[in-house]
Amino acid sequence: MKDYKLDKEEQELLKSIENDEWVSVDNLQDEIKEHQEIAKNSLKKDKRINIRLSSFDLEAIKTNAVEMGMPYQTLISSILHQYISGRLVPLDDNKTAG
Image (tube, rainbow, N blue to C red; front, side, top):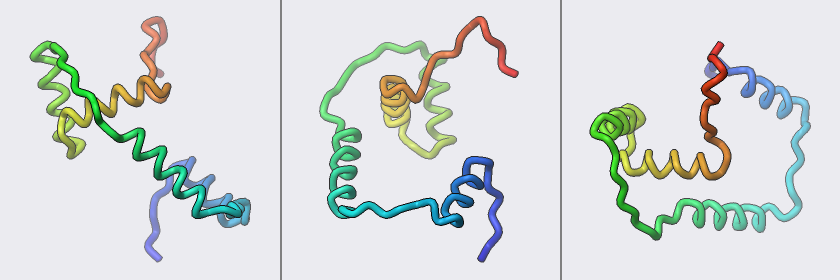
């Protein structure tokens, strides 16, 4: 088996698996179907919008999208989805990184 460098979260996950802390659900196929439906509904794009951005912001988004290997519209959609689902939050201007 190949050795991989794991971050702290991955190490904790691996340890929990090795300690048999995971239990399979009784209705695995039903759970899989339910989560597939949730994923399908989350990823379904059924509306269009028009938005005006500064040239600088658009070029920065396009550059980031290229670096991430995805279309820039997909990146914008992903950022918006993360924000509305609470996984992307604005930085507090009064706090400094550190």
